[in-house]
Length: 145
Image (cartoon, rainbow, N blue to C red; front, side, top):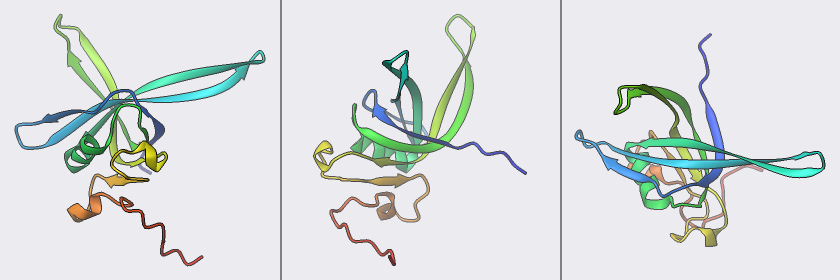
């Protein structure tokens, strides 16, 4: 049996996505995502916020750069990746990040300036128009129940 590396997060963007265009033409965006959990300790409400580094590539990165902004609530799916690099002093550093496969904008329509109530983007769409699902106001679905 092979392993499973799956991450699902719902949180708020800590900053606008940073967009980079690589030499080969690939687009990559990076941003932080805050997830907050609330619990009660000794009768007091306690909040604990965890910050996650998120990376998106190619078409998904372009969509994220266009629609995501600091503070927006977003659902992100992806996998954990840990990479290492040498800092300026020659010390080896490790970074763990979520490499996103898709995302879904959450929140009220008024929260999204572009008019998207819920938008979904996926890393491997078959056609460019399939990259954004749910961008219109059509609330009908084709479910049989």
